[in-house]
Image 1 (tube, rainbow, N blue to C red):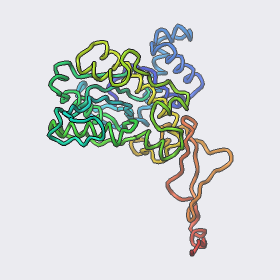
Image 2: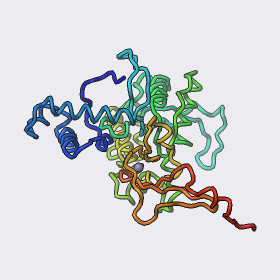
Image 3: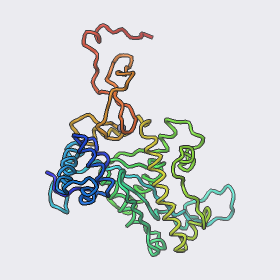
Image 4: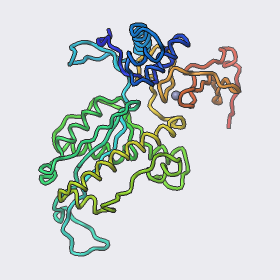
Length: 344
Ligand SMILES: [Zn+2]
């Protein structure tokens, strides 16, 4: 049951569910008109009711494929929800320590004045425009208290099916879970991680693997430099409570997420260990394991992919450009019996 019978905002993933050229044109126009039914109707010289009927029918069909059933407390009903992919980046405060010397120092636990903690995060849902930015208050900063903000990130993890981060596995995710453990916050519901740093190392040889360098090489929107507070000045001034520094931290944090999304989308068709969206999304039709699009086609030249002992259907996704294969073999039983393989 779909609780909300209103037309939801345009979502390009629903386009393939238009069943005619007219439906497709209407749904695209709905997107171009800011998801406003009356504006779309005026543009297409149609009745608003006809437009809303088409939009609703496309969204209903899309929901049937893209959905997982879940309980929505707000409307007190079981509703359909699309797959959620969260792209995020956290910023942390440095540890503070007492030191005798400045070079080649080993800093013991009893020389630490305060360990680092999370100070802000920016995150967005893939396919949506809004970017959520949250930071600790100055009071929380002075107390080194990141419990509130860590809980917010844990809640986002719980909401997400897949979480995207650059160095997300080794740094962002573990920093957040470490802080959650310290604050006795319960673990999030399970989610999958895509780490663009690990993907960069595994699938490509790029000049450097920092997000800034990858974005520059790929021609993506670049990471921002700290203009007014270069380097460590930005952190020092934020700790001191300088509102201009916090404003720059916000801009920098948000821009990182915009850059990360672009980098992720460029890498996505290459990431063969990407979490399988076909399993995460309760769809009864074949969908792309990387981007969840139902637009799978047979490649023009190669129709099969083989291992030394098996043969599978090969598909390409017209949305992301990635490749996928059938799970079951297409080899006949007789052929399998007669197949000879290397002995040494
Ligand atoms: Zn795809």
